[in-house]
Length: 440
Image 1 (cartoon, one colour):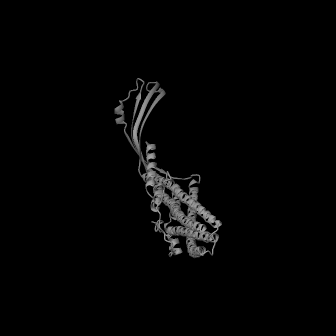
Image 2 (cartoon, one colour):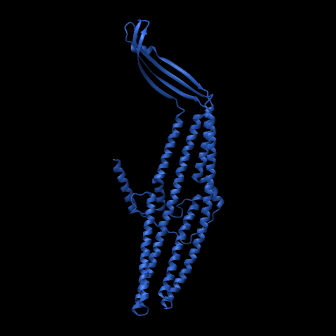
């Protein structure tokens, strides 16, 4: 039955991916809900929640029932002056409760609650990392599709050029070598289109693998329209840094782990305090001698007459524990130092990442602006070269060089644009702006 359900789930997901194109939000949400690494962290969350419930339940008393039986073979009984055989049994209920243990139960409860938050922040950190990867892979698909459009556009131009060259050759206006060169250009552009299609498929495959889909072959995404006139916007580096400190789950987890380490010190100190517990036992017993001359009451009457109620209070005071309590406190303080160091390291990592994201966003924007200017210059040069070729001033080789320069400039501009967009998304991520904003 489980295998059938698993198979139906795979077929459903495969059919779903074949019927629709995935948006960026759907990809991010799907990865957040189905990625195995994220699911493993969520299972750890559930385990920590069970630990918290266990800690809460330690305030409750314990109760146990018992029923004991024994057979005694004695060598001498003074009443009958010979050996004897005795059967006994006892039954009852005992209960115990912790009255005082230095606050250990409360501290363990607080520690368990902190561990729950720590695992939640760990899950959020993994979700953020995978979401960034999804955005990167998604933009890579869009980038490669734009590169494919450029390649297809250039193929159309070279095919038109081949048609024109064929007519000029038929009229005797160009040499056979020029016609052959035009044919070679078309063949090369067809190869470029084929290569661009492969890169699109590769990018789709990479994203489907990241999403851990059962079948990548029918997977496709929605195209997003991103204008070329995108701008950098205004970002205050210090403000972004403060937002990242306050909102990044990795920092929050380190801070919670520091609180946990502080609780560990308090827990270790309870080893120096006494423990007081209370107990209660309700029980009865029965005894029977198999030897003649040793009379016993009936079973039920003994159970009724032998009922006992026992109340007790136990106090345990630590006097010498082989220095274990002292060492436990020292160990907990070392753990606190490590946790404090982890907080500082996480903040340092965030600071470095924010500064790098800020630098990369600004530098990639400048590169994008330069690439747009290069395209404008290349378009003017290619248009002039085309006019010169049609006027017979320029040969097919120089025209091809000018056209290739334009294709290269356009490709570099598209690459620069999506590199800038992703760098901007990373900066937005640390600034607390949703990753999918502006890419719907």
